Length: 223
Image 1 (cartoon, rainbow, N blue to C red):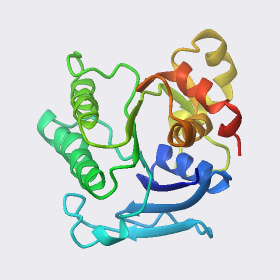
Image 2: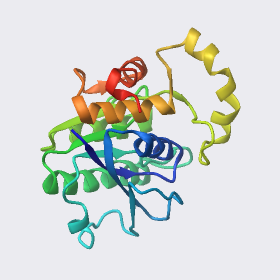
Image 3: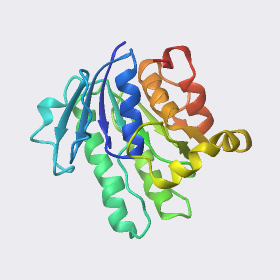
Image 4: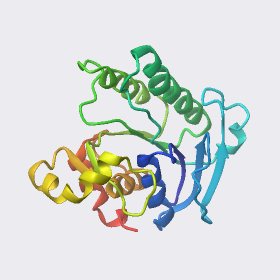
């Protein structure tokens, strides 16, 4: 099965990394990026739609039909935000996009980037908000929903949007991987695992770091 994917968040570190993997993967036929500003990538597989209001898709709905995967990598840091504002951006925005896509493409596989430690009953505000998003996403009428919970992600070499901490810690990744394999993965593997989940599925709905690495290394997960 060839993947026709929609990507949200391609101007951020995770979305940029996932986009990079989709464009080089033989199993991906086409990619539509939706964002407020251009991802500044040119490729024969790639189309881009700019949208100012991520709570209203009425003007672009006809462009969203016919896709069988969504890789939702849009997100913001909770640092300095109150729960109401963080919930609007992280929960409400996600559910608005996902609800629209579920209605237009019921055969779609939806992959959502959450994070290690996510739980609707968690002590941290961000974990509760993302946990609520996870729990409500799985109720939507998609073909499948996969919840990705990466920890520290080694950035992909040559990409623009890796944050400073990731760039600085990247060279130490082999040490982190050896000592704490349950808490780290590579951004490359996040992208490959999403593609593979859309192609063949995965036995678990929630993918922790070890699951991400394992799924990315399956045969058809290679470019």
